[in-house]
Image (cartoon, each protein chain N blue to C red):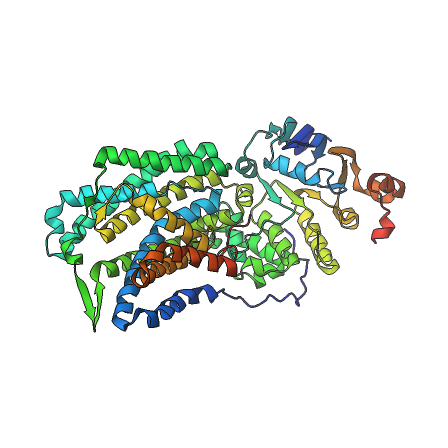
Length: 340
Length: 245
């Protein structure tokens, strides 16, 4: 190698590194806008924590979905089946460990919840692998067929779950240490909702670390942006996609456990009921964006709780309106990353 | 040409209903820069994409180091030691310059794993890369993005570089920098297949030239011969060199 010869004009100055922070303001703006409407500060605190907890759980579920779309343009309308699977597995594991869940000891409660989460994530991940091979792989690059076959997969999955756990609702009581509320002044905040927020933040932190600090994470981000270029560099993006699909399914399984505990009961339709919210969240956030998905989930969670309290009849519509408003402002979502 | 590094024989490529390449014959020799010239739509980009496996040839053979690679997947082609710089540069805009380089260095998990001598050489070729190392690549100017695209292609030793229109849309001063950088690169005996429409740019760098029209190579030979023959330029490219100087 010889010495450097080419020079670049020193005038080639870059614009200052600028982070797009405007969407970050949407969550506090939404929360503060609801404050005068809720009537009392304590009610607002309770609703806000409920909304954040719901938003965190939706984020956990939706994060895998948005990456799956971003990497391979796969629209998986069957994502909800992994939620249902995770929730029913939790009923089985926690039911078998009812002695531990009924104990007043937090450690014994956690000793029951962790195996339930591990089982839900492991089984959802394995089923996700089979789902990708049997249902998704034959329809790569065929969006209409993807919609039809993944919806079909959702129906078949639900029916199979009914075969194992039955068609009726199964109770999923909270472990004893997570029942009740903390009282802050006049505001009551349920302990479980705080726990859900903590788990959601932990998942976000791990995902953020993986996506920004590891080579696999860089590959995922690059693949979402331009998968053809990633392949031209010698990386097999289909393998990466399978890994992301399994991780996304496992996260949906975890979300199912948290959602089931949040609802304190599980029905075979629990996943399909959440599906609409998931798509609202990933569209608001910008397809393929985990950060956008996080913000979108928090906004949807808060909106659902505020409108559920103020005007229950328009609760679902309010989230669709939220999505429309965001898309009018930013037609590709808050943080658009998909470059196609 | 004896024992070329890359050899295309009778390559046909269809994209949907369109028959783009209609029997391309092309040879690229070791350690040389071969320039592929031709008007818009002649099939130059399709030729590079077919070599990379981004589009499959419907007929003919693509041989690299003697082995047929026509049916291979893109990652497998890249792993043979072929780097590709597409026309749109393929920069990952949300990633920093450093992160773009880490990804291009397939064998490296961190930037510390990249050969520091080679990295220093690249910084010498393209000082802007060092200057904007931690900046998002999407903020770079068009010329800097092109430099990053080439820098990524050479971050690890490659046997063949496929570069699509590196001068496209660049200011004349930046084009001169690119020419200087490519001359530097040529001194390392790197084999390059360069697609170009700017004949003046191509003339200064190419050892050999192939001119395409209607999906076929209609002329191949030394660049020097084409550069000296204005009549041939007129007939093949519809231009005179003087008009581009």
